[in-house]
Length: 375
Image (cartoon, rainbow, N blue to C red; front, top):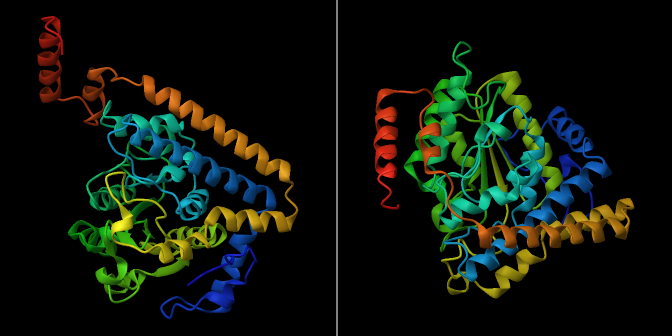
């Protein structure tokens, strides 16, 4: 498993930790990973820390708001910030990202106003943001379904005369999913189609150890990354709490997709420090010892220790903390005043082009709304 930053913040060499027998352990591959890691200067690592810390402040506030009844549900991402930020920073901005429903840090890297993530969990919208604005697709709540959507988009990129309308400059797609999703038929079908078509797509699996209350060890007798072997898809297993390793691995994967063609598979081994969603009680199925073990591998604390060793001043961390408190206040104020938007938006975004059915639906809605009976 690739690890470039140990839990205490010490930098490691790629060659020390490339122990995946299916990954090419030649000096050229290790050198490439080191070169990608070197792109993360101290300034860029400080940028990564800011994304991670602000996402956690946002995530904790959203969790609190759900507990107060302001959100119908929330899917926390605490503990998975390095996997998300490292990978998102490595994806070219023109390429399309297809998330599941927990990629809040990826959204932050992509430049979304974090308030845009709130309405769908409050039930005031069915979407929340324009995917075209940041090449960041809407959240998908059906487990694993987004992998099929992503492969379809990747295959569309292969047809130069029919570029996708969502990200017309894209050359590849990155799709995020969790360990539980690997047990779904949709994910396996997506892998079949991607391998058969040699589609330009990165499957980014965040293995957070638990599919709600089912541990990964019960879902698979082998590391999940090795499932890619059965589809003939190259893969790499990486420490998902190491932002440098996840960045380098994602850069490596995208370069491989561009140079060799076809899909790539990354398993980022991380940990869901909170509940699966706020409807879940993790104390019923996992131990405090396990939680303490993973708390010692906290991705934000790890990166902070590394930055301190590089000379980052305390004032930087204080500034990020203050920025996080302000973000939490903004999210709190926005959520409590958020109401439903313009219903007619649904007629603008469901289909790529106008058609008779959608125009008939719009006319029916306008006639109903004109009656003034309230809705």
